[in-house]
Image 1 (tube, rainbow, N blue to C red):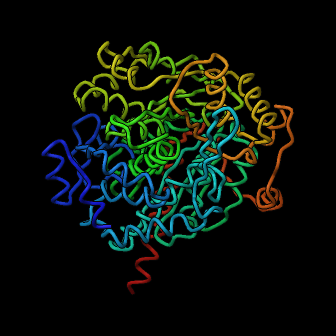
Image 2 (spheres, helix red, strand yellow; image 1 turned 135 degrees about the vertical axis):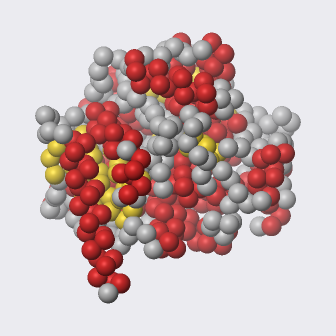
Amino acid sequence: MAAAYCCYFFRHSKSFFSQVSGIMWYISTRGIAPRVDFEGALCSGYAPDGGLYMPEELPQLDIETLRHWSSLSYPSLVKELCSLFIGPELIPREDLNGLIDRAFSRFRSSDVVHLQRLKNGLNVLELWHGVTYAFKDLSLSCAAQFLQYFLEKRGKHVTILVGTSGDTGSAAIESVQGAKNVDIIVLLPKGYCTKIQELQMTTVLKENVHVFGVEGNSDELDEPIKAVFADVAFVKKHNLMSLNSINWSRVLVQMAHHFFSYFRCSPSLDTHPLSPVEVVVPSGAGGNLAAGCLAQKMGLPIRLVAAVNHNDIIHRTIQRGDFSLSPAVKPTLASAMDIQVPYNMERIFWLFSGSNSQVIRALMEQFERTQSLHLPKDLHSKLSDAVTSVSVSDDAITRAMGRCWDENQYLLCPHSAVAVSYHYQQMDGRQPSAPRCCLAPASAAKFPEVVLAAGLTPETPEEIRALERKETRCTPMRRGEDWTLMLRDAIEGLSRRWTGRSSRVSE
């Protein structure tokens, strides 16, 4: 393993020295909040200035490192990436390896992820072999292990606050359910998740799990969460944090998807320069896309395609520089991507602005005031050079699902079908391209209604069918109620309970 470390080549001396000293610092995209280490970034939601945490310096990987990494398993890639961004002074390498092994121990496949090589050059990277059958198990299981490592070390308690459009909530719950020093509050958009997604959250009855059903969509439920995190004193008093994809640790782990896709789909690592691979990323809040942009910036020769449904703010931004809200969220078959405010785009803007926090702060404050923003010409040019995009209709989603089944007897979930639809468009247009890998964020088993709508037969594992027979627990948040106040009350109640327990233990 020591030999692997000798391969890292850092083009910038500042980056080199920060790595040699073992410290990786994180700064806010808006430039006002103090910098923090990995533990600080992990245990935060938004930065105090409203921005998102990003590494102060990005390590640059040379070709020898990429060649070495190309033979690694997915878990080993996660270990290498995390060791670059965490540092041994916070988590020694041996401990880090153990935490990542534990994170993936409940996955149904020992490989953790699986690449399906299908007909006509279609490569599908299955990211859904975790407990909840969705890609979010990958990053959240690791984030939860890192978190519990620090909490046990410090003897602290945290309350995790999560808003979900479908899969984040259940994956976050599974990653921390039963943990003695963690409470988790999840807000789900009632009626906007599939029945299976909702049951995966409401059937977990552990004492530290608290689920609220909100009468609103995923963008609406994000508002009270952001309001709570804006109260810095309240956040600090109650050790409040988020595990949404605003959390840096999730973006970090998701970088491994892109490295693994590249290494498994690249025809050769012996050319100079290295041949590119196109990675098609189904995009909602933009966490996987931000991870891909970071991998690009570190030297991975991938071409990124952001594939979205009818909620097309990311597509409009890449194509025209138009980062503006539509009048309303449009419900689609790819429901977990029914998002109007893809908050990780702020990270992507920051990357392509040359880490210019002053520019990003002005842009994002304008967007928050007016819900409309046109990117500066230079920023838009750099973004559109690095990422292309496509918007896919519901009809195209079901057609892609049907065609993939007809050609391969392989079921796609609707979100994976958004990416595969792009592949079919390119193939039918006989567009010359690099090898292509479509990320598959969820199993079709989670979306039987959409499988039926595509004229196909759902395949539902027994553990998912069993959810129907379980007891549920969910607290309603109705329209007209003060959701921010309800959240604050719930958080204060959990803090009082933890303080009472700690007092009894110390006595």
